[in-house]
Image (cartoon, rainbow, N blue to C red; front, side, top):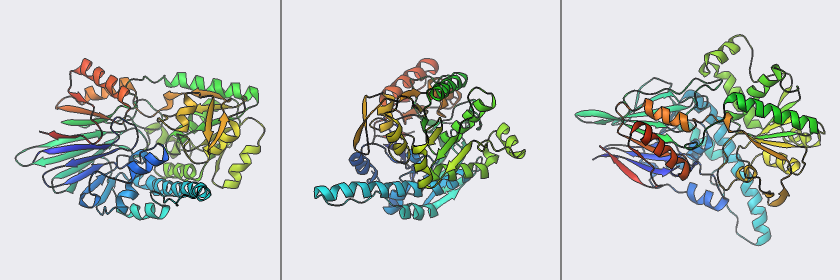
Amino acid sequence: MAVSIQFCGGAKTVTGSVHLITTKHSKVILDCGLFQGKRDEYFAINSQFPFNPQNLDACVLSHAHIDHSGNIPTLVKKGFRASVYCTPVTRDLCRYMLPDSGHIQEEDIKYVNKINRRRGLPPRAPLYTKEDAEKALKYFRALDYDHTMRIADDVDLNFYDGGHILGSTITVLDIMTGSRQPIRIAYAVDLGREGMPLLDDPEVPPGINYLIMESTYGGRRHETLEEAEIKLANTINKTVQRGGKVIIPSFALERTQLIVYFISELIKRKMVPKIPIYVDGPLAVSLTQVFRENWKYFDEATKKSFREHKDPFSHDNIEYISKVDDSKKLHDIDKPIIIISASGMCENGRIQHHLKNNIENPKNAIIVVGFMAKDTLGRRIVEKQATVRIFGRPYDLRAEVVVINAFSSHADCDGLVEYAGKCRGNLRQIFLVHGEADQAEILKNNIRKKFRLKVSIPEKGEAVYLR
């Protein structure tokens, strides 16, 4: 029997990554992420799998972002009883990320059911609860970088540093095929960006035969970090001069810590005034603590800071907020401040309250520092739609909107092409996933043009056979 890959989620879209590897003796999935979108579509897609979770031998988790890890509790609810393999940092991060995801779903369903009662509609249940998420965590098993582990009868696993977020990986599966050499599959979804502060650059595993690679920014080039810093500083300075607030929707994991680092550096260099910074959300507070506890996984410069007891995430003008009452008090502050709050795509969490209270004031600025998927509030803000709906009510978008993609920890079009080139020694084929169709198509053409490699863009549900 040939080895096959079925692209079950995250094909021609950016969220919901899950891919099934089937061998002669084993079934292994790469990631099990939440698809993010409109409520009914979200539930329909995330509640079903095109495979039987009870028959899986392993789940390999590349990193802790919810679009890669967030549907593991559903997998367990439907009978998965094997191990979820990830790095120690990813395991520690998921201890907070997954229960938080369950809690958000419970709160969202409370709101939905309140409306349904008024309309005489039947109640709905969340995809999973906080308790479901906590049960799923007992199946996590940590494997550090550069250690080989047999995870199924004919599958070995090795993790290389993905350089995307703390604990992220380039996952490598070596599949035994009898007398032949093993088939080596590398999974670079998400792929880090070279030269970013805090993290090491992504590694290139040797001897790759098949590469599954993201294409989020397949047709887009990031600004330089220097340009991004200037844009960030200019926006903060203009907003301070207007007497307004700076609202930054940001993923609690990685992007929040990175933005805190950059703003702190701007203050140190006197490029912006030293105004209060509020990191609002219990998840961001907990994840920042995980970062501190796992400082040995940062790059050398950041490790040096920690050895010298200089925490890059703590300064006297930064306050981390967990309590709801303290979060509400931010609405009453009538002076320039910076609020960094999750979730990154503005679909839930405290950021919606901050947007509701600040989006109609032209003195304020909303700085978008991450990718916003289609059909999300974040994308509608990026598109500068005149009116957006928050909590079901329309709000006029009068605040200044500034988009800075350079802080993305994803490789851009040039980085992705170059990474593909570095892998080409024994490479037979590249599969592009985790990107909208137009971005994947541009990346495919650029890789083919520069390196003459075989590149394909699989459809969702498509299975390919490896020889």
